[in-house]
Length: 208
Ligand SMILES: [Zn+2]
Image 1 (tube, rainbow, N blue to C red):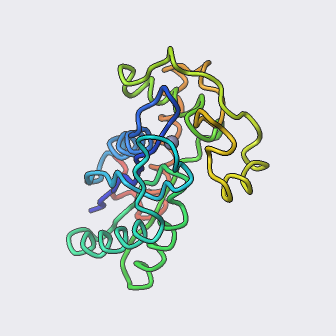
Image 2: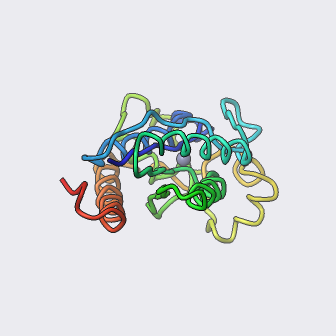
């Protein structure tokens, strides 16, 4: 039996998307992983890079890591396999360290993150998925381009100074062309990749 835990964040996603965007996407992916038990989401994470925007609620890297370690320990008492489905890039390091720690302790815990490609934050990619998942919570009339520079080139400055320094509206990308159809496609592709990951890990046990 596999327990899948959506690991998200509560952070600004521009003027047009809800603060729960990452969590909503993680919950949606876990819900599509038929055969697994879906845990309630971890809806706070490490979002220091989004400080200075109203609504961001961050618990930082260390606490995120500790929460996942304790959660993984506890979950392993009930479930032989535990998977963190992590959709927020800022959580990648704490999620990775927590999994390393838990596996060192002999627990069968893994992490998986979707690679959607496209805009990095609150842009076309996430906006399309939110249009597919919860259109009434997307305010397309407020969608506008943010910083559209290449994310790789931006990374050093983002890490040092945060999103606010490079994008006053909090968006990395351009959400204006987003569509629900594109969002559905992104979610379907990610779901297929997630299922393939789980099959490769624990075999056909879950393949429904
Ligand atoms: Zn996001």
